[in-house]
Image (tube, rainbow, N blue to C red; front, top):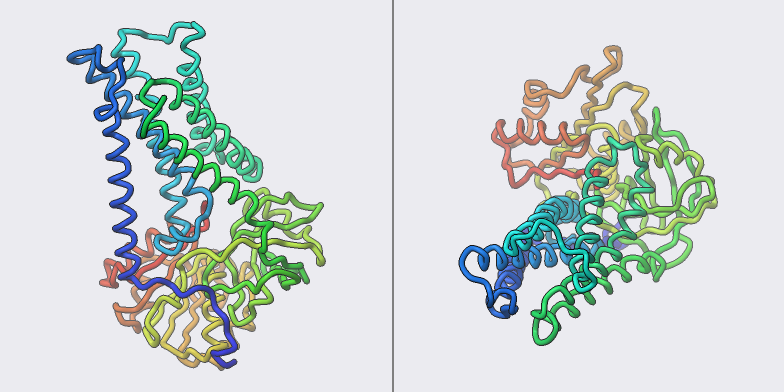
Length: 455
């Protein structure tokens, strides 16, 4: 296939550009939070002016904690709306990781905020009077934040299905944002007029627009696909082939992922993220390999041919397209983590990219294997590709038998240079251990990339 016939997604930013932009984003966050923290000093309310000593310190600190929580909630809403700009700098997985950590920080700030305020007033509880309605709005807001945080953290322990949690999380956000807006605007005269008043309206309005955009974007000028087949792909795994039926061409890089929404009466219609296993050389068709691992994926076999599907994407920086041409590659996959690597290898085969590549795929048993004939075929088109299969629970299968530990990994990668670009995708513990072992084997840390399926 000629390179001019291949239409990939937007070019990746260079590491230097990403470094500069990430620094600018960090500086913006620091300056923004610093400016917010200065409001109780620059725009002092009468409640602060009439207090002295420890009481003034407690009250001002409580206001700062509250405003910091307000600011982080705004970032929380923005980070959950899947903006392309932060994805191109940090990758969406890291943005979502920030989202989770930020939620815990917000909970801590929100709990400390009323404690400090009440301590400055020598009070244990808010008097049950009508004039304190803004404070009680804050109480409901705090309860909502705590409940959201607890449910999100303990969802699996509670046995709450992902699709129910996801819908709740998506629709609770605007309610909490509205309560936050009312509480901040009316709880203190600082925000009745002037710059603070304008900033509250402006920042809350921007977040509201981002949330609305996020909800309607999947239905506006997005490529629509139709499922052409659903076939078994090894034990507890299914291969879904989709073809584009409307909208612009879906251009992506090998290794990237998207959010897929299937319009089927046999399965719930919320979005789910999946790595794309097909090559960008076929932008009008997409292949997914989905393993049964949760309440939704266990029903994926019920999707019938002809089912329509909308795709939001592509997202992610997990792609060998970021590497210099000709650089050596090491791909290490655990289980269904093979899907982005499969996309990369297929693309390499289509474009005759015969750089030295080592692919290590660890599975439970041979029954969990899929596309064996295709992997064998890669050996004819990519003579410098070496594929090693590792089976952790099948002593009679071909290839390596047993877990992928450090001694085995050292032996398998011995023929590759320590300057190779390494891509790891699989269970979180497997990725963590493998990355640590590679660094101990003197592979370059800044050339080791991981992809986490967990959102």
